[in-house]
Length: 241
Image (cartoon, rainbow, N blue to C red; front, side, top):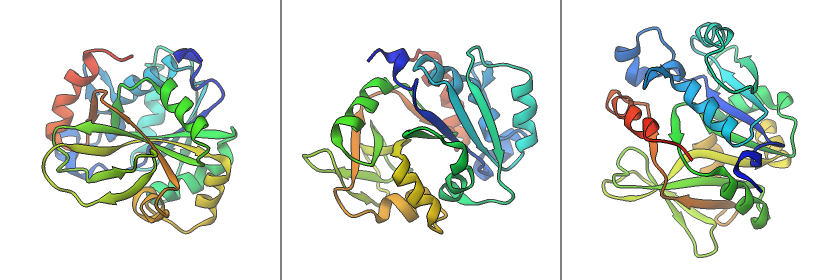
């Protein structure tokens, strides 16, 4: 599999409906997914990254300030041709609720789900290949960071399966990078549930060993705080795979 073919037959769901309360003082009425990074909207970098891995179709799970995002898309800032479908939730539904709301738009046997406020420059080819070999219905891409204080840690067994999600604590660690591969059957179960948070209500409640994990050392940034948003240009600007 070539890198540019990794997502050719996989729909992508981008979770981009959050309120962005922690950086509202910096962005004002600009939705977090359109935060300016290295001269472009964050979403432009994310869509270009997905396109380089062969993505053909992305479903944007929108909510807060969705009209700003649809107006931006109409301007055609992304350099790559991805079929982008916008779905606007009627009220805040949480990350699991957003997937429930757009389930009918996700048509492929496996679906890549990404947080709309994180960027990881990993080669998704290896992630897709590992997911398929694992036989798991759900996989999470994890990254090693020097300071896991904001994120909480993922404890992974020798077989590459998640043992548990640990509480936040300072120091280096392996964290959830906000990139997932789900089978259609797994998504159906999420859609049939009343879960609000994908992380807390779904993934953290799975029995140990059900969730497959792939760990990478790639560059990672979460733009959820003013400090991390300010650092995003360095992470994204120094190149993607």
